[in-house]
Structures are given as structure tokens and as C-alpha cells.
Image (cartoon, rainbow, N blue to C red; front, side, top):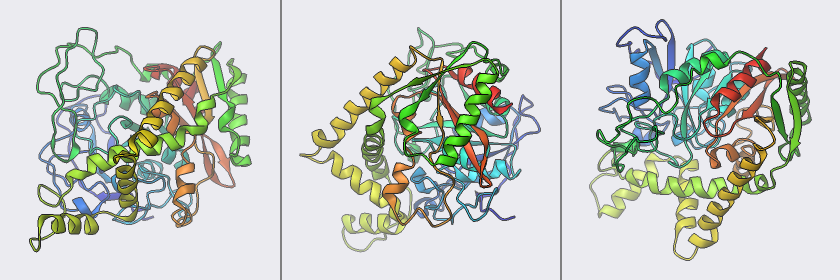
Amino acid sequence: MSLNAFITEETIEAESEGPLSGRTVAVKDNISTEGVRTTCGSAMLESYVPPYDATVVERLKDAGATIVGKANMDEFGMGGTTETSAYGPVKNPVDEGHVPGGSSGGSAAAVAAGEADLALGSDTGGSVRNPAAFCGVVGLKPTYGLVSRYGLVAYANSLEQIGPIANSVEDAAALLDVISGPDPKDATTRFDVGGDVGEGTDAGPSGADATEGAATATRPATDSNYAAAADGDVAGATVGVITDLLDGADERVVERFEDALDDLRAQGAETVEVSLDSVEHAVQAYYVIAMSEASSNLARFDGVRYGKSGGYEGNWNDAFARAREEGFGEEVKRRILLGTYALSAGYHDKYYKKAQDARAWVKRDFDEAFDRADVLATPTMPVLPPKLGESLEDPLQLYLMDANTVPVNLANLPAISVPAGEADGLPVGLQLIGPKFGEEAIIRAASAAER
């Protein structure tokens, strides 16, 4: 079965024995690997070979994991089906005629097909949870700041997090144990009180927020053992059902979602209905913010420092335009144009400022919801996996597919997708959302749903 799950298949051996000894890991191709090319699914970086490892890659190697390749992805993480990759689409191992989700589709497909035991993806608006749901595996998006982004090629810095994908909740939690914790090279990671971080500096194409030895914290910001939280004990827990995100969802998806809630209730959990008025505007706010940050981050790809060259004929602007015309695909160009427009003079307050106001509203709504519930629940995706080629014809519908996942990124919260059964032979995911740094709560509830 050729799923096209990898862009580069190359073994990177562990540097020591550890908790992941004997386990194989697929690494999404926007995470830097020293000496192994990192393309971000783009022709722009088809020959880029990083001179350093991302922090999460260092931690994998220190934990004994064997990296088996760089997983295929939507170009620069821009897409929800892994069809915008310059290296061809990924097929869903459950049904090869359907998409695996995105943008971390290669990572999820590799795990679901047994081509890797574990995988790393990145989640900007659902890009770990979406493919996990569509491929029938587990995907966890950590709280912003729990996992270092040093070495992650930047798309939208204020939204994205690296997260684990696995076949079980416990395996995903064990991988989170390895990659989480503060990093002196990333000023956005969470340190203990007293931890002092410096100002970020550019670190090549990743644009990571790097500091050199600025942190003084001596232990992780949390002493939690995430794998131990996968005990399935939800007796007495309150699960808030976000009713706003059920409207318009596929009836088959809602049916599997209700079945999953019944299972949780049977194990002692209580469910309550909660409403988040702000989620109606979350997708619009997310795309304005994400595209604006993307237009800024991707300006570094000029064909001079790195990336596809625009040649030496004509003036610099001509060369710059040629490099980006040849190096970027249609979806990336679309998002750069829209983001640049939203940030342009005369439109900043009309679009970007309003989007940030909506983001604050989303955060307040979640805070109020967690006054009533320990975790919140929605279907991960409101639809079943589309057929290959079906979604690319209508970009707007593709964006609206993210309605259930993007509010979590706007609020910088943790969330997990766990399989909730199948409908018409295609996987359905249950999404569980926790308060900031409430990974144990969602892992516990997800392990109960898994059972």
C-alpha cells in the first residue's frame, strides 16, 4: 500500500537509551532535522537541509526513539487534507479514495498504516486533531507553551504547537512526556515562577523564538506524568457538550459523538450543555490572524538566503517575484495575499484588530465554560473524510471544516482527538478540550472514551 505518507524516508538513530527505545517515529516535514532535508511540503524548500535539530527532535533522540522519515504535509501547514503538498497528496489508509486530513496527514497516515509507531505533527488550527480523526488514531494538541517550537518552521507563531499522534491515548501521552517542558531556546515555553527568559531571535527558516541560555528555571514547568493520567477514571467528572458546534454537523458524525458521550456517562461522568456564542466568529477570526502571521513569516523566503532562487536577471524585485511564483503553491499564495491585505494600511483595524478582539471573546467564553465543566466535548471534525480532490474546488468550504478545532488554538488550550467509531466505514473523532495546562484531564477522559 503506497500512501505517499513520507516526503523523505531516512533513518535517524537514537543517541541513547530511553523511554522510547525500540519505537519508531515519523516527524512532520516542517520540523528541523540536522542533515536531513526539511521541505515543509513546498517546492520552495525542496533542497533545504537544516544545520540543526528542533528541540523536539533532540528530545526524541535522547529518549531512544528511531526517526524513520519526514512525513508529508500540506504546504507550510496550509490545508486540511494534505492535498496542497508539492510532493503529491497522501491517501487515507482506512480508505485510499479519501483524504487523511491535514495538514499533518502524512504523520497520521503513517501511524494508522503501521509505518511508524508514533508521529509528531504541528497544530495551528487543528492540524494534528483533524488527521487523527480522519485516520482513526489519537492526536493531541498541547497547551501553547508546553512544547518547544524551536526548529518548527513558522506559519502562525501565536497559534501553532507541536503535538503527538499515536494509536493509543497512553502512547500519545508518553510521547508528550518526552517532548514537553521548557526550552531556553524558545521564549514562549512555560517556565516555573522565577524562570527568566530573554528576547527571541531569528533562527533561520524556522523563525523560532530562540534565546541563548536565558532561562534560569531548573525543572519543568509541570512535574506531571502524562502517561499515568491515562487511567480512564472519569467517575465524578463533568463533561461540557458545546452545543453550538453540533449545528450543521453531519448527522452520522453527531450519532457517533452521542454514542461516545453515552459511554462516558456509563463510566460515571456527568454531561452538561454549554454554549459559546463566540465560536460563530472563530473561523473568520482564526483565518485573519493565521494568514496575517503567515504573510509576515513567509516573507523570509526570498530566494536569496534560502529557498528556490529567482535567478539573477532583472532587478531584485523581479527575482524575488520569480522565486515566490515558482516556489509557492496556490493555497500558500492565496493566504499570503489575504494576510497582506488584512495588515495593509487602512484595513488593519477593520480586519486584524477585530479578529484579535474576537479571539479575546473566545478565550472569555472558554473560561466561563470551564467554571461549569472539567473538560469540553465536540466532534473533532463536523464531516466525514472527503474524497480525494473533492475539497480543493471550494477553499471556503475547506476553511469552514475547521469550525470545531480552531477555537482551541485561538484560546491556546489543550485538546485531544480520540477515535469514536466509524460511519459508513470512515473514522469519526471525539474532541476533548481542557483548561490551560489541563492535559491530564483530557488524557484521562480520552482514555475512558477509548475503552
